[in-house]
Image 1 (cartoon, rainbow over the protein chains, first blue to last red):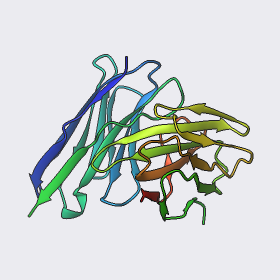
Image 2 (cartoon, each protein chain N blue to C red; image 1 turned 180 degrees about the vertical axis):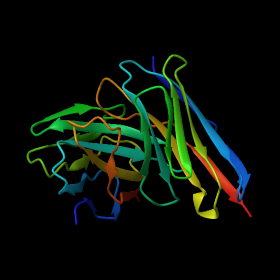
Image 3 (tube, one colour; image 1 turned 90 degrees about the vertical axis):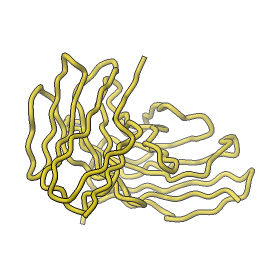
Image 4 (tube, rainbow over the protein chains, first blue to last red; image 1 turned 90 degrees about the horizontal axis):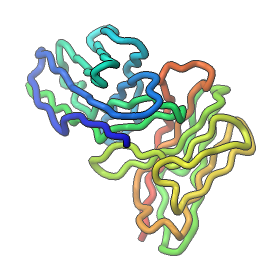
Length: 109
Length: 114
């Protein structure tokens, strides 16, 4: 079967670091994407990991462990504008992304 | 500017009516996708197409239909068979030849059944 798990909500303060975990079970796994979505808006692409390890893009980093079927998104130096929903999305053998239910991040002053 | 255009942005429908949501892209992408999002939920895949004149059912295709007659266009019809069509619909595209996991999304169409 196919499953995808990430925490439903995370709260952190400005300037802090937060990690959003994602565990997945899929067939034909190619890689793991991360998306950000602000309320009422469209998802925007943050990162994609095809290989094990850490990918860094500015304040955001993403990690993948294929053997553990696990990944995480790391957000550093949190800003109020980072308050949004974050989705992990495995890219699978059917050549389409499957999105999880998302993690709602609330950044407090 | 390249991008994906969805229309209409807001749509109201009476029960029993079919409606068609438009999705056009000028990114020269081969692959296009339709997702549905309910409040506070993730995105669920309705249909996707990797190439013109070909498309596949996603996870929740019942009550929906699509066509892919042109590379640039991937319209979605929400039929009267869809029992709970009120939702936010998102169209996306990607380059099928570059496996980067990156989808480009339109601004979405919000459908409300009255």
